[in-house]
Length: 94
View (cartoon, rainbow, N blue to C red):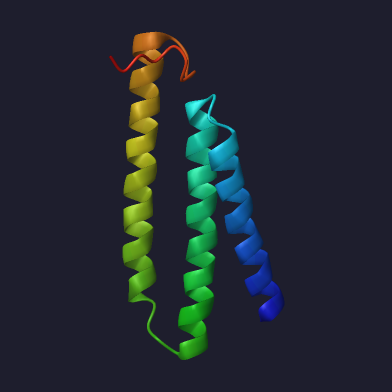
């Protein structure tokens, strides 16, 4: 149990490091966010199974993570349609 907990924490830290360091492309940032959501999902699943709680909270978490992923993909598609790529340097906020 502690070995899998350690692996999930390492997964979250790797996703966080990629999120902080690779900010050139929007797609890489979105994939690192989804990787962090996946590790948090596994951590919550392990915790809820350990304390014997029902898994309805996981279903709500999955719904919010799917909405977050769909929103990120729609931003990516609209950015590619307007600017032609997903570089943050070509995206001017002013």
